[in-house]
Each structure stands twice: as C-alpha cells, then as structure tokens.
Image (tube, rainbow, N blue to C red):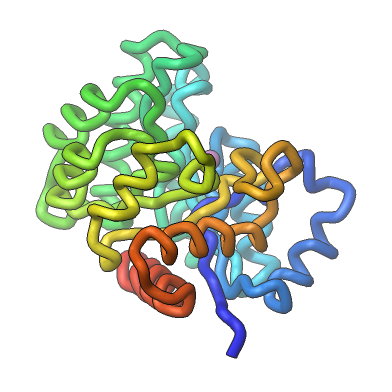
Length: 257
Ligand code: NI
C-alpha cells in the first residue's frame, strides 16, 4: 500500500502557489498526502488559510501572527484572530514565536505578542504552533511561564538541541522536523530525529520554503514531505511505513481529529 503522510506545516496560501494552487491541491492525495495543516503568519494569510480549509476537507488551518509581523499587532487584530479561530477547521494558533535572526519586529514586541497568543490558545483550549529562530532560550522561558495543564502544540521546523527538545516534550509539545533534516551538514536535526521518541515527532515541509534534498533550491511542496520521512526512517532504522503511520497518528492525537 502506498504511504500517506500528514504535512504538519505548509503555506499553500503563499503567492508562489498562485499559478497552480488548485491543481497542486487536487493532486495531493495521489501524491501521498492525506492531511495538511496550513498556518497563517499574519491577518491576511490567516484568512487565506481559513478559506483553503473551508474549501478542502483535508486541509486544516491555524491562525496567528508570526514574530516578523508582531509590530502590527494590537487588541483589534487579536480579536479578529479570536473570531477566525471559531471556525471548525481552525485547529490551532500559529505560527507564533520569536525570531531573533531577522529581528523584523523589536524583541520586546515579539515577546509580548507571543505571550498574548499563547494565552489565546489557552482560552480556546487548542494547540499552538511555535516558530523559533535563534531565540531558543526566550521561547522556552515564555512557554514555561505560560504553561497550563492543557498545554500542547508543535515546535515547527525544530532547530534547537536534543536537550531542549526533551524539555519541550515535557511541556506537552511535539517536535516537527522538515527539510533541514535531509541536509548533509545539518547534524543537530539528525540527532533530534535519532534521540526523540517517534511518538513525539511530526513531519512537515514549511513549503514553499526549506525544500528537502534532492530538490533543495526548488519550490517546496507537500509531496516532498516523504523525503523528510525517508531520512528519519533511515536514522531510526525503521521502515518509512512506520514513520508515515506514527507521525499521522501523532498529528490526529494532538489535534483530536
Ligand atoms: Ni511556516
């Protein structure tokens, strides 16, 4: 039987899919993809994510503001996210977090709105999806401070250490690996794939970005998630079927689908 994968993080609303979005989405199933989670990154992309989720049964949405754009956040935008999240196909808040690599918004502002959006996930009792670039310590600190009994979610395109991954797992989170795990020089993601138990791992593309080998440099698409799965299967010395099954099961469990 052919493998079916869940792509736990894809931006199908991205303009790089404008030319062939519908065709691409309609061919996902035959290309081995059973479910896609499409997070937003600001108000417009969150609305676009909800529209896609409304249109296609196998696409789910998350809504939220990426740290790049947290400087545009205010109480009014928070209320719009709150309203959008009432849609049945919206299953999480994201992507939210901190990005100290680009620093597109100042760090205090990033931290304020990361915290506020975690509180929104708590209020709605849904998981949240975390973007962390070069901000591991502050991300962990805020998540720990905002920890509550139902805390759960995803560390998307995980790039920090194995030790930190273990701490996030203790907090109730899943570790999602993407294209970088296939890159030859990416030692840490490979180590994370090895050390973190399969029942806490998810796979993703983050398309159109972060295309795995052997297509690195081209536009990424959900169907390439199988190369991520293949790499993890090789590292864990299990079959790709096991990776497909377990990561799909993890996804359904996390979002109660
Ligand atoms: Ni993303």
